[in-house]
Structures are given as structure tokens and as C-alpha cells.
Length: 311
Ligand SMILES: CC(C)(COP(=O)(O)OP(=O)(O)OC[C@H]1O[C@@H](n2cnc3c(N)ncnc32)[C@H](O)[C@@H]1OP(=O)(O)O)[C@@H](O)C(=O)NCCC(=O)NCCS
Image (cartoon, rainbow, N blue to C red; front, side, top):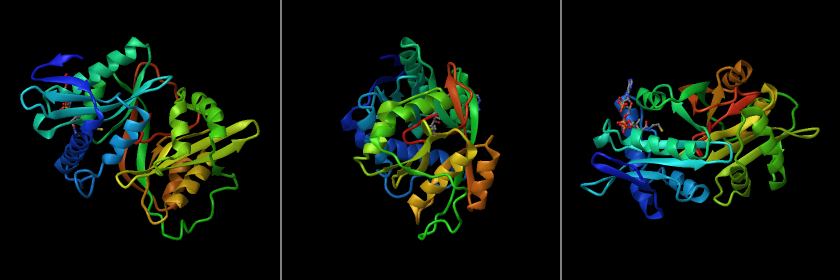
């Protein structure tokens, strides 16, 4: 792999689990605290371990770490997700003692090279608050193509006290839905990731729920959620219409009773945002989906997530 001053890149290994998890914890929390916000990861240093474990399951050997030549310690990392239509990446972290040393830029260059070698675009979701990462990506040639507001909803133990937003029926997904999910996401977002859908629906690690809206000849929407203690998040998902998206979000919120899941709501989808406010949602951050290479303008509602990272 490519060499840079004072550090080198190598593939992330299973035995890096704790060191990688500690770096995700300290690097991310240090950033949020530096801008006067609360630490994102509560608890101890191994709180974000679900990220490593999920990616070890779905993308074994694809992650990249930067290792300091002197100390032999990991000073940077990125999880990489090659898919049939694109590569996606995230989370990206540099060690706080090594910020500004070109660690992230070097890792990013390696990922772009891998994607270019197979002629695929690279996609990610980046925070609008975090100008360090926004700049990292746009300097490298990424272009934002969709904007989201991160909205969280405190769901009471008894579920939302509101009636369903409409009469659109929602049910749980089965493995038989996977071909229709592939077709739908290709139509709405121009991407697909068949193994991810199978992984969510199999749910061997008991983190995932997948909701479906049917259409007469397939499906018109699906929405995944993650119940991890490190990241309780609704997404990824797509829907043809805003009403279908609202029905899916309502169903998913009620599956996280007593918790406070966050959703990336497209800012362009005013009706969905309004509905989320009516359910008590608060904004906590803004994100943009960015692409290096072509990205389809969404032909419907797209709701990305950070675990697994999608755009
Ligand atoms: C974001 C982060 C990964 C960057 O890592 P890093 O190794 O310090 O970044 P690099 O040293 O490789 O440099 C980043 C590039 O952005 C540029 N940059 C940073 N701030 C900038 C700004 N305001 N305007 C323009 N360019 C800027 C730097 O100049 C550099 O480009 P260059 O090398 O061409 O000069 C790191 O700050 C980090 O880990 N933050 C905490 C976790 C996080 O927020 N991760 C990203 C979201 S998942």
C-alpha cells in the first residue's frame, strides 16, 4: 500500500478490534468536545465496538489503518464498503495527536484508487458542522449531492402517542424481499448492495429491523434501523413517495420504544420533516451525501445511515 511520511497504510485486521475501537471513541469524542458539544460516544472506550464488529461481518479485511512508523500504533483508520454499484466509506478517524499530518488524506487517496481501478464512484455522508472532514472530502474532489437534517425523536415506552400518519400498510421484511429491494434502491438512488439487505434481514447480531411498504408489483419502500447502544439510528432506506417514507419512519420509531433514535431526513422532503416535528423531533446536526464520480439525483426519498455507512 502507499507510503507517506512517518506512517504507512495496511489492511485492518481482526486483532485491531480494541485499538481501532478506542481510536474511533477518542478521535470522534475529541472532535465534538473541541466544538463545545457533548461527546458522541458515552460510556467506556469500547462503546463503539459494534462498528468494528458489524464491518468485520459485512466487509472483512476491507478497512484501512495508518500505522505510525516509530511507535507501531494505529494513528488513522477508515472502514471501506465496496458494493456492486459503488464504494462507500466511513467512519474516518485520525488520532487527535496526529491531526493535520495527512493521515486521512492518504487513506482517502488509497480508497479512491481502489474504486477507480474498478471504475466505480465513491460515496459517503459527511457532517456540515465538521469542516475538517467536509474539507478533506471536497479537497479530494468529492461533490455534495443531497442534504439531510439529523432529527432525533424521544419515543415513549408506550410508543408514539400519535396515530399513524396515513393508511399505508407496513410489514417486516423477509429474505424473499431482497430482489425487490435491489430493484427499488437502484431506481430511487442508483445504487444497490444486495449483501447488506440480506445481512440486515438475517439479523444474526440482533441489531436490525427492516420494514417494507408493498406496491402492486413489488415494493415501494424499505427502511432499516439499528438498535446498537453506540448508535441507535433509523436508516438506510428509500421510498418512492413522502407518505410511504412517513409510514415507514412511524413504524420504525415504534420499534424503538423508550429510546431516542436519529434519522437523516432529506431537507428537500418538507412534508416528512414537518411530520417528524409533529412527532416531537429535534435537530442535532446536518449532513451532506457526497460523491467522487457520478451520483444519481434521488428519484424519491433517500434516508442514509452511519452504520453501515451509506449515501
Ligand atoms: C476529519 C479528520 C479525519 C481529518 O484527518 P487528518 O488526518 O487530520 O486530515 P489531513 O491531515 O489528512 O488533512 C485534511 C485536509 O483538509 C484540509 N482542511 C482542513 N480544514 C480545512 C478548511 N477549513 N478549509 C480547507 N481545507 C481544510 C487540510 O488542509 C488537508 O488538506 P491538504 O493536505 O491538501 O492541505 C480528523 O480531523 C478526525 O479524525 N476528526 C475526528 C473524527 C471525524 O470527525 N471524522 C470524520 C467524520 S466520520
